[in-house]
Amino acid sequence: MYRKHRLEVDPLREQPSPREEGRRLKKPPDFLRIDLAAIKPFHETLRYGHAVGRIKAQEMKLLLSHHVGRLIEADFDEALHILGEVEMGDYLAGARTARGVDDGLINYLHDLYEFLRDALPQDSVLFEFFHCRYDFHNLKVLLKAARDGTPEDALLTRLGSMDLEVLRRGVEHPVELPSPYKELVLELEGRDLSPQELETLIDGCFLRYRLFLARHEGSAFMEELARAAIDLSNLKAILRARRLGKEREAAQRGLVEGGYIPTGYLLELYGDTDDVMVKKLERTRYPARLLDFLLEEEKPSLSDFDRRSDDYIMDLLRASRRISVGVEPVFSFVRARENEVTMVRMILMAKLHNLAPEAIEKMLRKLYIE
Image (tube, rainbow, N blue to C red; front, top):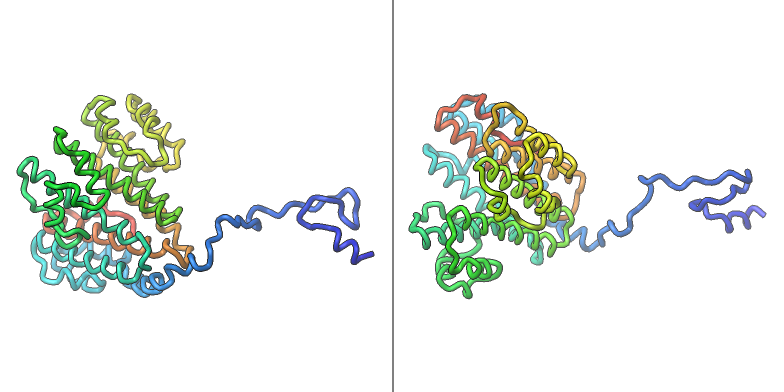
C-alpha cells in the first residue's frame, strides 16, 4: 500500500496528500526552480577557463581605493611613486609631461590587450570588441585630415588592430578595407558633413558594430553592456542638443538604434522640461541618479554625465563578479583596467595643472574593487 502510494504521487504537482485529504502540496518557490534554457553547455562554460585562470592572478594587482585616496592628496612626483606599487607604475616611471603620461598609458594598454589576445580562445570576439574602438578612432582622425586638413596628432598608432597605411589607403579606396570600415567610408563618400556630423556617424557605426560582436559571441552579458552603451550615448546626444538649442531633427541624427530605450521615445522627451524628462526616464531601466543633475540649480557640464555613465557600467561589471567562469570575468577585468587608465590619467593631468584635491575627487569614477 505504501509502495503503491509513493509511485502514484508526484510531489511537485498539486494533488491530495496521502495522509490528509483536502490539503495540497505547494509549488516549489521561485528560487528553487531551474531555468534550463539559462544553463550553458559544459564546453561553453570552460571555453574561457584558460583566460579566467590568467586574469585571476592579475586581479591581485588592480588599483584599489587606498591607492586612489593617496594619489589625490599627493603631488605629481609622489603620485608616480605611489603608482610604482601597481603594475602601470613601470610604464609611467620618468614621465614629466602630459605627453609622457599619455605615452606610458598607451604602452600599458597595448600590453594589456596583447595579454588578452594571448589568453583568449581563438574563436572569441572579445579582443575585437575592445580593440575596434581604436581603429574607428584612427579612421576618424584620417578622414578629418583628408577632408579638412586637420593634423593627425591624435592617431593612436600602437593601439589599433589595423596598420595605419592600410587605413590611409582605405580612405581613398574604401574597397580595400575590411568590414565594417569599408561600408562606413563608402557611406561617407560624397557627403558634405560638418566635423561634428562626421564624428557622430563614425561613433554610431562603432556602437552598432560592438552590438553585432556581442550578439555574434552569444553573450547576454556583453549584449547588455553594448546596448547600455548605445542608450547612454543617445542620452548624451539628447542632452547636448538641448543645451545647444538645436531642433529635434538635428538631435535625431545623433541617435543610434539598438539600445533598450527606443529612439522615438527619446525624441518625444526632447521638448519636455528637465524635471518632466527625468521623471519619464525613471520609468526605464536606468537609475534616477544618472540624470538628476539636471534638476540642480547650477547645471554641471556633460562631463558629469560621462562620469555617471561610467559608474553605471561599473555597477554592471561588479554584479558579474559572482560568475566565476565564462566571458564575464574576463570582460570585467579588461574593462576595470581601462577604467584605471582613465582614472590615473585624470589624476596625473590634474596634478600637472595644479588642481585642488577636492576638484580631482569630483571627477573620479568608481573602481571595480573598492
